Length: 221
Image (cartoon, rainbow, N blue to C red; front, side, top):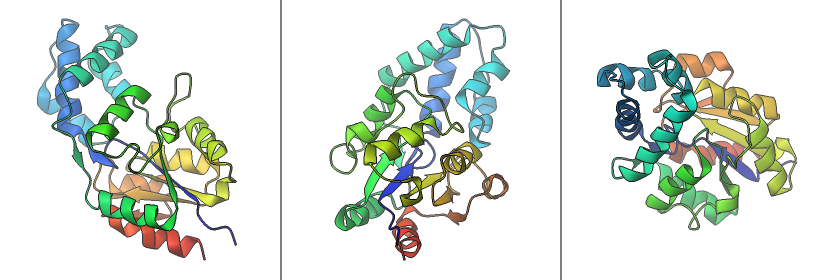
């Protein structure tokens, strides 16, 4: 019997709601580059699950994407994280996994330092998730590439079939499948739609993170 030992979570839109924060951060980044973008347009794209890099490409094709990304992360930290809120059921889930001895990890396409800053703001790092289990370290490829997940699974010293991937976008689900995890779970209250998560091949869908421990228990039988 291969009990689940590692739950890998996406960050934005899954563990925490960042849509207001990343919308204003993105607008600030474009403004710093001398470009004006419509707030509703940016918000709509994020709500539809469009990635940050894709938004840069669509709304600023004439801009240097690396310089734009640098501006984004400059404002990401300087604007603060007061507008970032935990997703429904987050702490109930984390408490349950902590009591069961199940490790949690984070695989995010956001810069590692930025992800850690958000997790510390919410009181998650060290209390529930060790910093070394927060990807992506510099040089790791973005999801849907499985690189981050493979790193986390190897760090836990387990086989992929003892891990699951939880996320709110098709890229999270595809990354989990590419990494060979036992199951992929789509969180429906984030950036991706139920239809998109299902089409990507999610094994299960949840509306509340507190439902996750029961799923892990069932998968461990």
